[in-house]
Amino acid sequence: MEKEVEIQLARDLMAGQPEAFDRFVEHFRAKIFQYSWLMCGQREDAEEVSQETLLKVFENFNQLRQPERVRAWVLRIAKNFCLMKRRRSQFAPTQELSLDEYMPALDRDGGHVKLQIADWSSQPEDRMLRAELRRVLGQAIAALPDTYRSVVLLRDVEDLSTDETAQVLDLSVDVIKTRLHRARLAIRQELDRYLKTKEGSAHASRN
Amino acid sequence: MPHGTEECKQIFATLSEYLDLELPPDACREMEAHLAGCPPCVEFAESLRKTVALCHEYQAGEMPGPISEAARARLVEAWQRAVAGTKPPGD
Image (cartoon, rainbow over all chains, first blue to last red; front, side, top):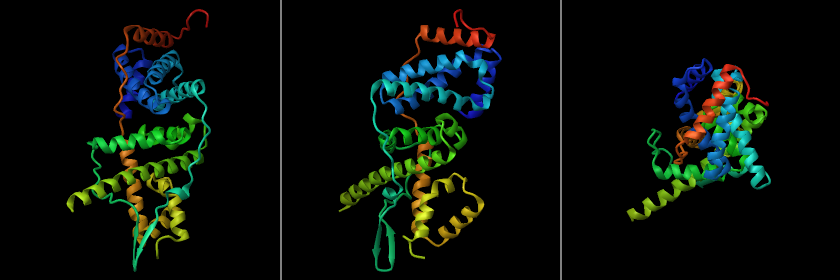
């Protein structure tokens, strides 16, 4: 659903229009579920977070001052419930990702210099992502440390702005930018590994 | 210019900001001047751009189960109370 549609649904609900209710719930329930599934890692937790978040959203609906920020507002509430789930379950130390790990090595063959990365030129950009690539992407996102995963989910998957992401996570814009870049590099590296494997098997099957 | 220089490292550190159109104009011009003469950096930037595009399209295969009538009723009640500007007794 486009952001404009979400914003209109939020306005309708603020005006007390019941027709918007089920569409709003269905849309945001799926969105919160996806985010909390990837943050908490458990279906049961994600189901609970979805309901708890929506309840809090509706309890405070009269405090939504800017309907144009409804997505960030909802996801901020979801983030807080996810944090509570994590505190209850386990405590894992934060792992930092370093930039140097992701700079690809070079093949120097005489005067020709080539990066040791896969051939990305044939990868589809259309909406019909191949299921396997999507699976690898999901695994790469899930494997990120929490602090990086939350940034990439909000900024790239949920399409919040850098400012909105900073507000949702109570972090500075600079920290968001740093974490986002490293998270993307880590994901890129995982996709690259997968693409190289595919290249290797395609090459082997030709010979 | 050969790839792997200090300049490439600087470029590497700010590629996401470049792709997000968040680089200040001066840095953006430097980036583009560098990319114009460094095919490996272009190749890498392109793979990162595609990574971001894939994330934008990402949808987890998992969906929540259907909402129960009781859960929906609680949400409706909370919404109607908030819109009417009243709080439940005891709050």
